[in-house]
Image (tube, rainbow, N blue to C red; front, side, top):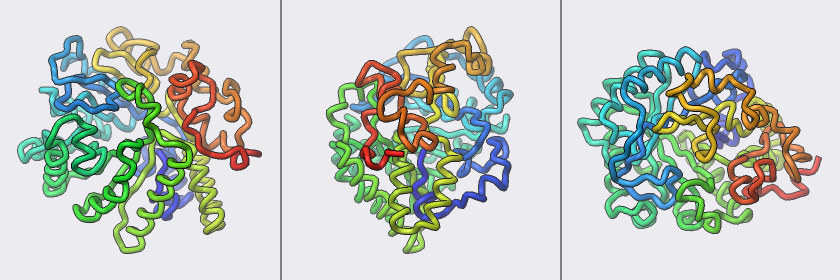
Amino acid sequence: MIGISKLYCGTVEASDPLRYGRQSGKLPSHLLQFSKDKKPVVVWNVGRRCNLRCVHCYSHSRNIDYTGELTTEEGLRLIDDLADFGVPVVLFSGGEPLMRPDILELIGRARARNLRAVVSTNGTLIGDEMAARLKEVDLSYVGVSLDGLQETNDRFRGIPGAFDLALSGIRTCLRMGIKVGLRFTMNRRNVQDIGGIFDLLEQEGIPRVCFYHLVYAGRGSHLVQEDLSHAETRAAVDLIMDRTQALHARGIPIECLTVDNHCDGPYVYLRLLREDPRRAADVLELLKMNGGNSSGTGIGCISWDGAVHFDQFWRHYSPGNVRERPFSAIWSDTSNDLLGKLRNRKQHLKGRCATCRWLDVCNGNFRVRAEAVTDDVWACDPACYLTDEEIRA
């Protein structure tokens, strides 16, 4: 994650994470990305079923009953292991996680064990009763996926009325005092709606938005040709910075992040170097603390059947299953060849990545995206949009 509001708008200073010792167990949520111990944020796909048909779904979800999901007992045992291991956040995802009957019990156990509990949802199932129950179990945050304004979103999500239902869910969370934000996956089908998303944030009083770069996995595998060009990506990131800054200047301090493309960090820095060199130096320190992509280190994923993955998109490879060994044991076992190399990836990267001046703040970007396009996990991430001149040491 690259915090546009934190870095470009200056809502976080380099001294802020240092005040807490940069330990994930002590850092407030908005500073977790700057932790130095890198205990993983864990995405748990609690179920595969979903009531929508999103064209970019990495889990190939449909609105059918699936078998083989972790039971309630297995899920509670998993949460206890994550808590004992020092995981700072569990992100309950799916499919659509709110379709799982015991989801509130699982969230409640996570909160009882002092884990931050986040739900990634399409928002369509959050009525007054569900919101009240989420409030009761002290959910930390709700991230609602919207991939455009009404027409764009409903076409992308495959169900007419999905936008209105999601927006109703967002309004219900705001009314109930539950922290809520938007998740938007950028591609050529919806990039024209980014400005409208900022208008929506302001109109509805939504405090947070995450703009995701497309990752080629699941149903999104065939969307490689739908990804933004490098020039289009640069324009989109510039627009996100401009609109975030404009809101802050008007006293609307939304939190804005970009996700899944770590060359956004150097891009923000290079822009600040032209506009505000003193601020740029502070931003560079924060980017070094962030450390870039952390698949297999600072983020992990557990599938509905217990399979462990290095991130939520790398579903074709698993170093183990929590039904056979605890997550903590699997994650700590660096005898796994790929896991060991991911944690020392700099010596394995090829091409532009190997000699890039920003390697310490990008860490080679998304390996699963490089593999999807080149069939080589150590090749350059094709979504890196920095020029040769910009990466030259």
